[in-house]
Length: 150
Image (tube, rainbow, N blue to C red; front, side, top):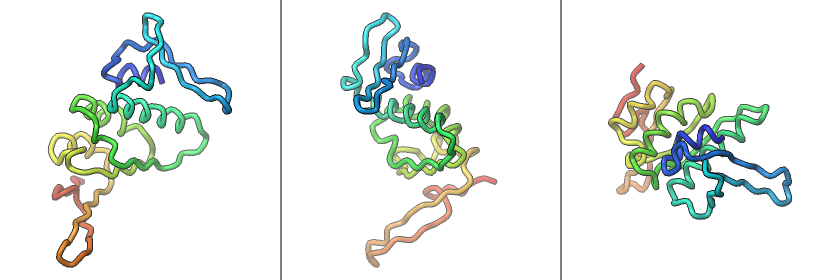
């Protein structure tokens, strides 16, 4: 977890010395420590850093289990800046799980550069289209107009 946070948590890149998880399930806690020894308060991380922290924790917990369930993530990138999104797209999602389902918008994963970073790892894409006039939705097999390259 420490290595992943040092790589992905850009506001503390290479500054995390250790991560401690309590053994007690009744009083569970997680503590981060800076390389200079002082604690890093999780409550004081900004929204983007908290999102990255939770994503790293999800992957660590998933990897500790004996079961390999699919992972579904909804609107994961909304609060992240471009650099943080790039790290998730390049380092996190490609190795998260055997099956990862991302529910997103084009403001989270753009149809250009962002989509190209993930495309090699994608087996299917779908876009939901809202038909306001008929008050219904329909699905196409693309990512907002981008057909998946085979």
